[in-house]
Length: 106
Image (cartoon, rainbow, N blue to C red):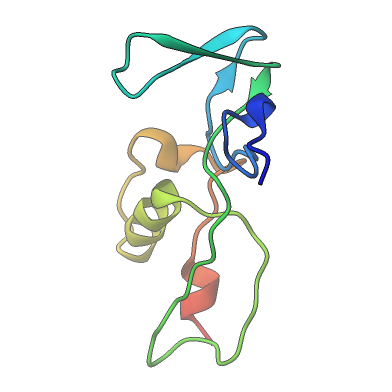
């Protein structure tokens, strides 16, 4: 299997909500966190990776499939929204951070 150097070895570098935007020529580092290992980023949004999420609830929608991007800020936004709290940090970014509340209601 060929390891893609343009994505630093990841199958996809598709970023998710609030993934960092790295400049062209960004040097990836070895696991020591200091030494460059030779791969550079072409520039743009990087990180996140794409993984499935499963929501299990007794009161939510049944057999519902969604294709919206979520991350840990989404979970924070959902809790804050459900309890009528203010939004902290990146959870306040309504453009890129989406609530999971729609999955939890009928």
